[in-house]
Image 1 (cartoon, rainbow, N blue to C red):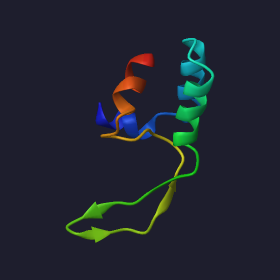
Image 2: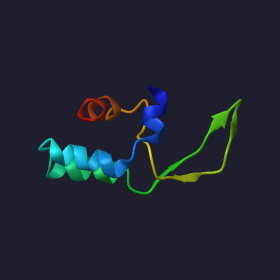
Image 3: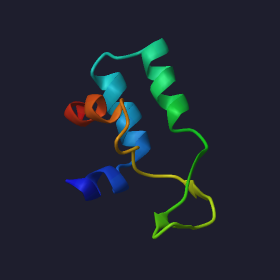
Image 4: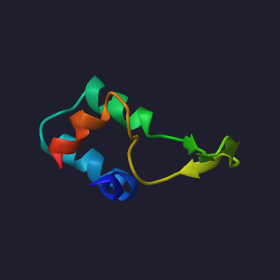
Length: 71
């Protein structure tokens, strides 16, 4: 299940949200959360450089449980 969060196509997420009649401010808020995202990896108190995230959804985020059932 964890890998599904990592590889989710965001365009498919947006399509699924609209297809389930979720539009307007809710749709645009979700879309803005995943626009120009940056991440880094931390292991043993060492951080990587920041990199652009183009796929996947945030994990351990308030929105994550809401997005999962839509797909």
